[in-house]
Image (cartoon, rainbow, N blue to C red; front, top):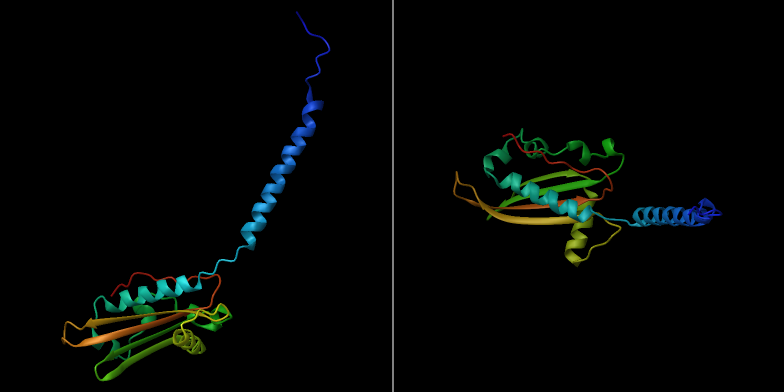
Length: 176
């Protein structure tokens, strides 16, 4: 038996097809708007990772005579991109580092790089035990270490501040 006057053609499916396309389009737009509107702040995490990497770089192996050398460059020794610490390259101040090596007699060596105004912001945040979102985010790490060549104990304090949104300070493996 052949059915005539069969009405199951596209005119009944078209409105549902357009409704599904509209739902898909609206879902995509809402997803993109939600994704773009979320502001993730990775400054504190970046400062923490950078300070831990610097501690690892300076402590393995630790030799105090290396730091007293006039030709010592923390950027090349630890594989830091020195240009990221300079506002001339980035157009704004985004990173700061401060390394202090002390022994029982006091501070032996201080190494600083980047925007020194971030040191004041970090000191304020550490002293008041607060995290201010409009200031640079800071990380402070302190370790005690022994120089195996001399047998003396030292403390290494690393403060890193990050105020960037974009570039990443890449640490490479040191070759020395």
